[in-house]
Image (cartoon, rainbow, N blue to C red; front, side, top):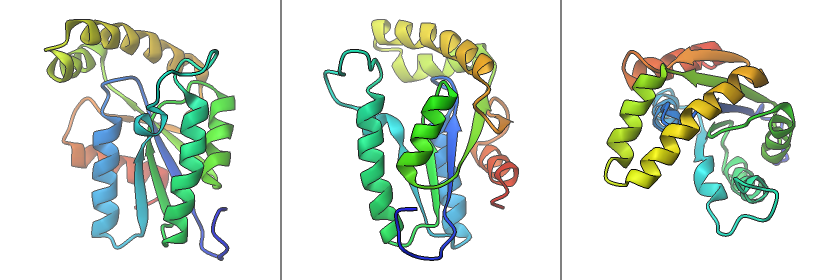
Length: 179
C-alpha cells in the first residue's frame, strides 16, 4: 500500500476490448461511489500511457503507464482515497501483477463484454470522421476480444452491451463486492 495508514485499499480494473465502454462505466462507478460517500479516484489508463514514441518492445507503452500510475495512485491514496477505479486493458497475468504492484493494492478485474456489432457501432460513432483510425479500432476490437477470452485475467464479467451505463456500473459494483 502506498499510504501509511490502516485503511483498507481496494482497486478495480474495468478491462475489455476497445469500444466496450470501460471509461464511461468507470466514470459512472465513480459517480456511484461519490453518491455513497466513498473516497475514491478514477483513472483512464490510456491517458497515463499516452506518450510518443513508445519504446521498442512496448507497443502500447505499458511501462510509461505503470510509472505514471504509481505516482497518481500514491497521491490519491495520500489524499484519502480507499477505492481506485481503473479503466484500461491488460492482456495477461504478468500485466495484472505489474498493475497491482503499481497501485499497491490487490486488484480485482472486471471484464466488460458486448457483442462485436454493438462495439463496432460505438466505434463508428466515436471515430466515424477518421476512416483510418476507425479501421484500426474495428480490427483491434476483434483481435483484443479474442486475446482477452483466452487470457483468463478477469475475476468476473459484466454485460456492457445492454442496459444503461448506470445499470452496468451498479452490476460492476455488486459483482466486485463494493455495493
